[in-house]
Image (cartoon, rainbow, N blue to C red; front, side, top):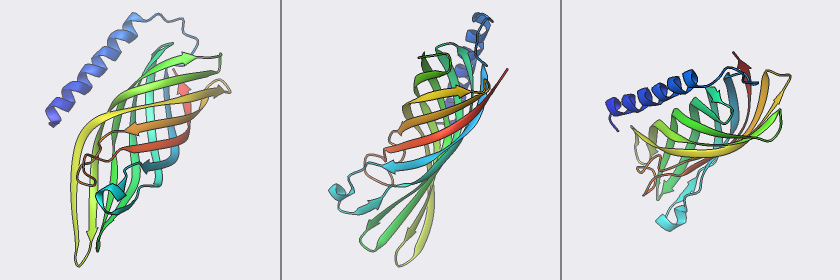
Length: 197
């Protein structure tokens, strides 16, 4: 996706957010803004044996995130995510891919109590991957793109302004240079956030 197209999508999301904020009443019992950090692990579920090589798709992942809850059941969220490293071996050549990017998501929220809620999320990630290939020589390259993401989680609030999260995310077809058809990366994370007005 061209940068100009991505900018238009982001602008459209922000415009929609602004309209919803204006339309929503001010009697909410929750703090609308939040920011936090999450740490977990990422993994690729690619069947590398099918393609005739070995791969290791498990690593530490983290993200910084912030958002606006503009309705009891809706929120808009932006995060910077570092997905860690993926490794594969094809004969005598080992390729390492390090991916990171910005994720834009819309959250659908289902409260289950005054302090807890389940949520689902969907959006897109603008990612960049750096490659290092080691064989008889060492070469480096990079790639970037924008792809669909989705996930789900549970959040629990405590001490009024603080929140803990357990989350699953699926990042689709992030990179077709690493494996044919793209790398499907799954991230499980545990995070905490501060809420404010």
